[in-house]
Every structure is written in C-alpha cells, then in structure tokens.
Image 1 (tube, rainbow, N blue to C red):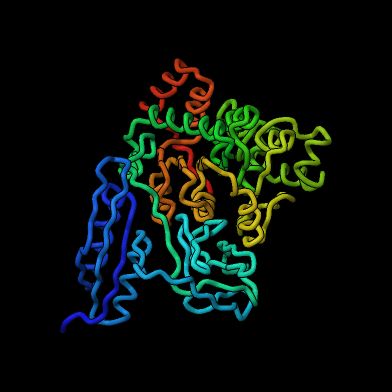
Image 2: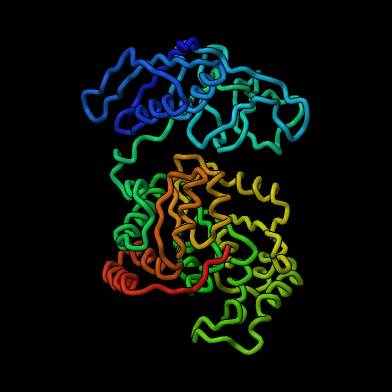
Length: 431
C-alpha cells in the first residue's frame, strides 16, 4: 500500500559531523517509514552550519507520529511552525495525558509566534508555562499543581542536541569510546583538573557528589583541601559520607578501620553509630563545629567555609544524622536549588547518588564520574547523562593525582600516575 501520511521536517546546525542526520534517517527506516531529502546544504567550513529538508511518509498516522516524536529528539522540526499546545492540569501531582516529556537538552517552546527558552532544564519532566509572563520551565511530575498550564504534544517545541563530540578539543572527546580500566589515567585526570580551573575562571560552580569510599580509601583530607582552596562549591552526598568523615575526625577510623594503620580497632564497629549519636545529641553538624567538637574533615570545611551541602537519605541509613533529608522528593528539590550555575560536576564512588544527580543536570554541564566499577559509569550514561567522562579508579588514588595536578605539582602527579598504572585498591564502593 502506498504511503499516505506525509510530513516535511527540517534540520540545521552541525547535523553531519554530529551524526544527527544519519540518526534521523535510521530512525525513519527503523520505524517503517520512507524519506526523501528535498534540500541539503553542506557547510563549506568546519564551523559553518548545514541544512536539510526532508519529506517523511508513513502508512498510518500513528506510525508517522511515532517517527516524528523520535526524530524530534535529534533536532528535526516540522516545516510548518505552530505554537505549543497547552492543557490545564486537572489535579496535583499528575500531568494531562499526552504531556511533552523533556530531555536534558536545551529546549524552547513557541508562544504567540516567538520561541522562548525553557528554564530549569531537566530530563523526564513536563513543561509548565506562565502564559501571562511568557515564561516556561521544567517541572517534575510531583510538583505540578492543579491549574498549571502544561505543554501537550511536541508541536511548538524544539530541542537543541549537543554538538558532536568530534568537534570538541578536550577530554570529553573520550565520551564516544567504551569505558575501560586500561585507559591512561594521568592525561584524563590532568584534563579534569584543567576543566575545574576553567570552570572557576568562568565564575561557574563546581559540584561534588561523593560516596563514603572517599573516606574509606583515605581521600577525605584531599577533598577537604579542595574545599579549602575553592575547588568545590556544592556538596551532594548521603548519610554515610558525612558519618564516616566525622568518624575519622573523632576516632581516626572509617567503618572501624584505622586509616593510619589499615587495621580494625577494638570496638571499631561501633564508631559510626557513636559518631551519629554524638552529632544528634549536639543538634547537628553545624552545632558540632560551633561547639568545637568537630575540628577537621569534609563536613567541617563545608561548615566553616559556608559550602552548601545536601545529604539525601536512603532506606538503610543508621541514625540518620539530623541534616539528612529522608523524604526523597524533598531531597530532590533541595538538590535542584543548587543546580543553577553549576558548570562542572565531579562524581566519586557513589552509584545511586551519581545516577540521581545526573538526572537533574542539564546536558551542557560536563560530568566526570570516578568509580572502581566500570558499570557505574555505564549505568550513568545509559540513563541519559551522556555528557559524562568515566575514569575507572579507586577514590583516593584519583583524588591524590587530581590534587597534585591542581597544585601544579607535576612530579608528584607523575609518581602517583605510575602507582595507578601498577595497581589499584580493592576497597568496595558504597552508594
């Protein structure tokens, strides 16, 4: 049967070297559609944009809609522009049927013939529009309220996929290659250090997402140095990171193991619980610092230097510490408050928090994920945080080399890189 349903779409930008055009053509064929390239203009120079106009045909309207929805994510837009369609939310905590589901790519909606940027860009949200103010923003499902105007369908919505990794000239060219423990780490960590410095020079924030293995492997003082030197502006973690950091400050142990001798201590298995109990009796981490009880470590540096931190709880937490947010929706909202202005995110040794925070970040925030388990980085990228660089390493060796690079101590960095090449710790990563 001849194809009856037709739509004309166009694409512009770096659609060839970013492989966006081939992805669109493959998607059309994979869904049983047909295409004809009606117009194609290739940019003459590397920085020049290209343009393509396509005719898409399908046998059924549902088939055509499926194709258009898929290629929309790659920047293919209908030729005939329309304003976005709005429906009023009829209840709290749920969007109208057919709501537009966002990506982490930069997005615009068309209102009264003008394209406006969508604020608070985040994947897996809806778009709520202020019709009077002419503004639009991403809103998570749980936060939508009855009476909000929600974008429905994909008409009047356009996305801007990130430029090709092949066009970049920094470490993030590595994103297209598989995660491997054999990849040279010294060059990768040197580039991360340079990215951190460039982020600071650009007046953007650096977000650290840390797991307790940072403390278990002996890296807490290295993180504390980064905070003191202004290389960390926001900290996201869980109950465990804060607990074991303060356990080290109080007892010199982490999970009851002496960080100086590497041996279990007498009754050390109680240290983390006694640490939590002490902090709860004092009223919280900030009170412990104010009273002079907590005098070192990551949490101490955050308090005395006014570095905001969000501690998100989990079902397995001991205590927890007073600052831990046990309501997951409240924890997400607390994190969202600190996302604006973040230019670089460093994730170390925490699978669950890395994936959770990755889901909150817009695609233009570069991410470095460090873990002893390659599957952690793969999982993060599979869930949509494709702007991620992965380094397979334990926490302390990575941090020691990173700090040496930030200090400009190339001799120390070279020595640490050699140690990384010949072995790595087997300390488990905890979320």
